[in-house]
Length: 196
Image 1: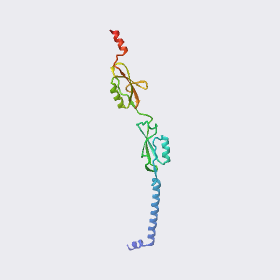
Image 2: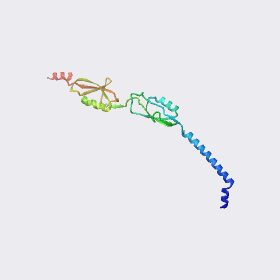
Image 3: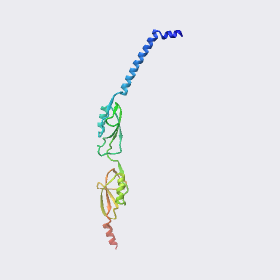
Image 4: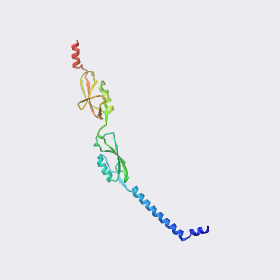
């Protein structure tokens, strides 16, 4: 036991302890330096405003800023933004983030998604408007023809072409309703007169 305490007070032991402490301090500095360089500690960049940029422009700006990115699809078309441009970003512009941070982008699709035309044939004009509005279609105008059912829908047109229930059109498309005016059609009147 006495030899052990003498060894603890010896010069050899103290030199070894000193060397071990020096090695430990050097290792700590090396590890901290490595961590700082790999985690970009203290290196922040301000997130640019990518709003309305094309995907190609966004990629260039993100790479120059040292940021990674992920593009997410959007089903909501916004006519105020160019097609395939950036609608939203997360985190928002102006935020301070670390270099190499991933930014998530929502891109404006090429147009409105398509919706199915509901069956409004033989439905009143008022109900037809409500049914079309419910799926995202608008009534542009109403045209009247000689048919007994006053304000009853007999046909539909889109951009001058006839469309039928079940057809698909882009959301917000304008529909023309062709409704009866309450008069007997000429062909039916002639038929009725010939039968008398």
